Length: 386
Image (cartoon, rainbow, N blue to C red; front, side, top):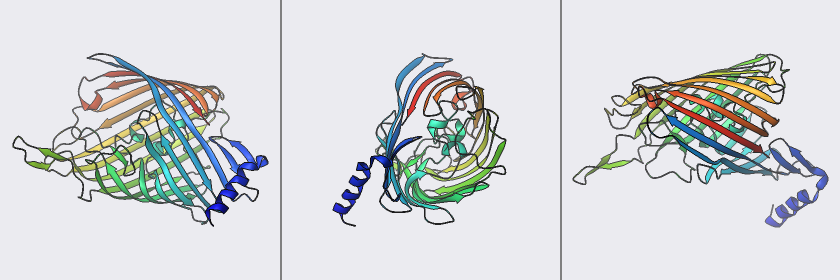
C-alpha cells in the first residue's frame, strides 16, 4: 500500500464522524469496515510530595508525576501499533513502543518496548493503583523488570492467563538498588549493564478473570480470586561496564556492575463487594561482576532481595470513596534491618479511575535497611485520564 493510499484511508477515518467513539482511556476513530482505526489518549497526574525524616530537614515539592500522551492505531486487520512517552518527573522518556499481531487463537504476539510479564503490581497501570506510588513488589527500583525491548506472547481465557517474554534488559549500576530500565530509554547513560532476559508468568482465575486494576468500586462485585506465579532470568552480556579510576588514573571495572539476576513472583488477588485485596511476594538473587562487593543491598558480591506487600481497599461509598491500607517490606543481605512501609490512603473518585483524587500517608521504618532511618511521607495526587 503506497503512502498516498494510507493517507487517504486515514483521512476517510477522520472524516467519518459517525465512527468516532469515546472510550475509557482514549478516543477512537474507526473506519466503516472496522479494520482501520486511530486512538489517542493520555494521563495527567499532578502530585504533591512531602518528606519528613527522623533526622535532617523536611522537604516538599509540587510537580507533574506523569504526563503521558499516546497514539494507537492500525491500517490492517488483527494488527496494531502503539507509542507512548512520558514528560513528567522522569523527563521525556519512551514508555510503550511496539507493534502487535492479534490474529492467532492462542494469543497476541508483540514486538517492541512493553512491560515484561512479571509482577502483578507492576503490570497494573499507575493510573489504577490503590496507593499513590507502587509498593516494593511493583517498583522497578527493587527488581521488577518494568518495560523491556523484546518479543512477547500473551493470551488465555477467563480462567487462565499467561505471558512470555524474551528481551534485551538493562540495569542501572547502583549497589543501593536493583533498578531495571529499558535499552530504549532516552536517559540511559553508558554505565548501564545490558544483557538477555527471558521469563513469564501464569495466573489462574477460578471464578473469572481479575483484570490488572486495583479497587472494587461498585461495591457489588461477586467474589473472585486469582493466583499468579512468575519467574525471569537476566545475565550481563559483558559488553558494557561502568568503570572506576584509582589515584594513579588506572581504570578498572566498578564494583557496582551487575552480573546476573533471577526473579520469582508469587501473587494473589481478591475482589468482592467493595473489597479489593492484593498480596504479593518477590524474591531476586543477584550477583555483582566484581567478586566480594559489600555495599548497599550486596554482601560479598551477592544478595537475595526479598519484597512483600499486602494492599487492601474498601469502597466506603460506592463509586465515590475508598479507604486503602497497605503494608510492604524489603530485605536484602546487605541490610542491617528490614525496610518496612505502612501506608494509609483515601481515594475520591469522580469518574472511576479516569478522574480521581488520592491521598496517601506513608511511614518508612529503617529506610534503605539502615537501623533508625525512619521517614514519613505524604502524597497528594490529582489524576485525569483521557
